[in-house]
Structures are given as structure tokens and as C-alpha cells.
Amino acid sequence: MGKEKLELGRKGEDLAVDFLKQKGYKIIQRNYKNKLGEIDIIAKERKTLCFVEVKTRTSLKFGYPQEAINIFKQRQLNKVALSYLRQYNLLNLPARFDIVSIILDNQNKVDIEIIKDAFSQEGCN
Image 1 (cartoon, helix red, strand yellow):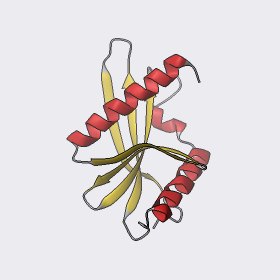
Image 2 (cartoon, helix red, strand yellow):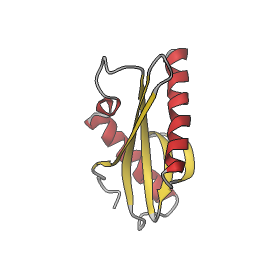
Image 3 (cartoon, one colour):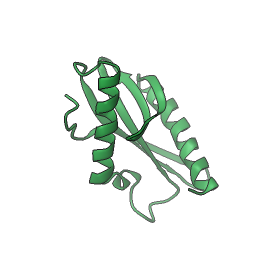
Image 4 (cartoon, one colour):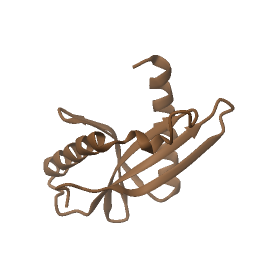
């Protein structure tokens, strides 16, 4: 992955963390990684554990950011989340997948949207 793309992703995640905090989420962990993959942000909203995928784009040339989270990515996120829940003995906790979609244009205009419960939780509850 190129340096510019990594910087855009990092900037997007920073914006997402600030946005989530403003919405009342408590950030538990950023960039959780294991052998199955990575989850950008793990947070709590009230009593629900939220696995948050952040997608940042500079334009809509290739579609909306959230459209990049295809069925294969969803399955991978499901596996990583289930592994996390097992590791920390949290299988009884309500959990969901949220997406933070960010469009950051070259004038630094930011459009952020959260999609709560964006896709199904295979085996996570």
C-alpha cells in the first residue's frame, strides 16, 4: 500500500475516533490485529460492543466508501470479531458491526457518516 493511501487511512481513522467520541462511543482499542486480520476500531456504545470499519476516500469516483466492504471483507471482520470476543470472554455481550464512511476532498472538506449495524454478525451473538 502506498504512503499516501496509508496517510489517508490514518487520517480517516483519527477523524472517525473523534466523530465516534462526539456520538458517545467509548473507544476500547484501535487497530486490533490477530492472525485472522484487523479491526480498525473497537468501541462501546452503551452496553453494545461495536466493531468499527473505517473507509476513507477523496472522491466518489469509485463509489461510496462503505461499498468497499464486500462480502469477503465482512466475513473476515466476522472472524476477527468472534476471535476477539472469545479471547476476552465477551461472547455474552451484545455486539454489532458499524461502518464509518468518510469522504475527505482535496479542500479538506469532510463528510462523515456512521452506518450502525451495517452487516450481519455470523456467530458473534
